[in-house]
View 1 (tube, helix red, strand yellow):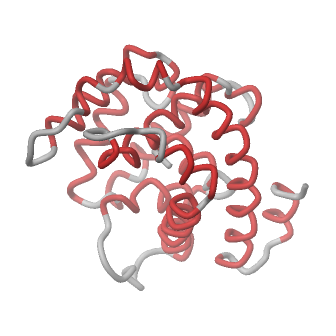
View 2: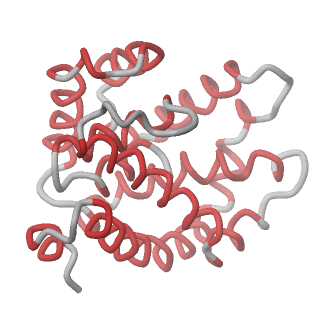
Length: 207
């Protein structure tokens, strides 16, 4: 999953969300000096990624991409699923998407001193481009894919992938609709395990 999904699934506590967002910039063992909530957020992010990669709906969605896109299917689904989550925020999120986006941006700004060094540019990028709210716009998805393409160290087709995603949109939407509620339930259980089974977390993810 991509940034919007990880932020939403870590929303129960500020440290948890911060860890969920920083996890892509952290390699190896989790630093025990980090605040407990941040450590839990990094672990939650990793648990979500493992669950996502193995989920039958995601496996089936990846199989829809033929070469040369098959190699990049995981990246494409991460981005497209965030687009679907943003587009259908009223179904999956709480409150308005814009308010949540500002919450994410404010968290990264107020706790900037805790961000990994490589993450500061990402935080500025979110602020400058009205992310994650702008993931609902196809023009932003195209921009994100072009940016990802340019950051890879080898030739790749990501910059030209939006038309393919649009052609696959009905099938991918079905996969997402079947998968995401199950991911929410899994993330809720993982949160309770990582943060000591608090009653607040159980209430947020009951049902």
